[in-house]
Amino acid sequence: MPDTTQQSLLEEINAEIRVCTKCSLHESRTNAVPGSGPVNADIMFVGEAPGFHEDQHAEPFVGASGKYLTDLLAGIGLKRSDVYITNIVRCRPPGNRDPFLSEIEACEPYLERQIQVIKPRIIATLGRFSMAYFLPKAQISKVHGQPVREGGRVFFPLFHPAAALRDPGLRDVMAADFQKMKALIEELEQNPPDDSPPPPKPKQLSLF
Ligand code: URA
Image (cartoon, rainbow, N blue to C red; front, side, top):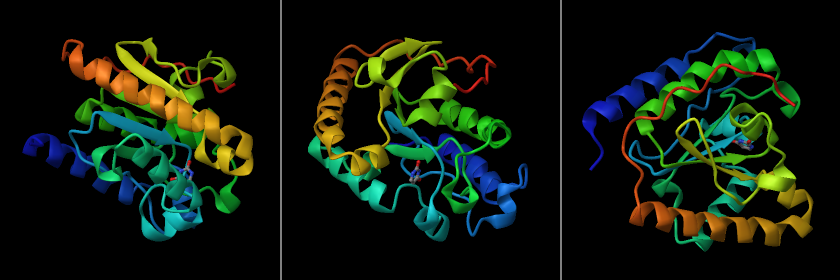
């Protein structure tokens, strides 16, 4: 059962995100997209930024990438409602351009607060912006599909679903990486690490 205090803390954070004006992306957004999923989720997926459909619906990953993500989850027996899904940046960059470092920095406290409340066992990064935020030294070609333990957290770097939609050669890799994540979930269920809250990420915001 989700804890009601955790639930209300998460709702408080998400309400702040919906009215956030900390960076200029608020000027062009239709909706901010705080994230979706249960507060007691064991896995938190962190993508890049909302696109057109997400901006319209105020929900993360609801366009083509989202449909593919939903299929990948189904392939390992999970529903979207089993996991928390959010992004590094919560408002759509105009024309779907890459988010600026200043925008990532403005959004960073929300992500850290969500992580502190949700306490996911696994943070699955989707794409380079998310991975670079948490694991600035990692190279996706070397670490995708493998758990990386750092700062008391367990990360699981994945390619961005849009990359696999553009390059069908990556689809088998994505499916295999999800199977590896399933094995990790089972391992962590059997041998849970101690439940102490993860420490906040040290400040080191260099991208690439
Ligand atoms: N791509 C992302 O990185 N996030 C979304 O929410 C949708 C597409």
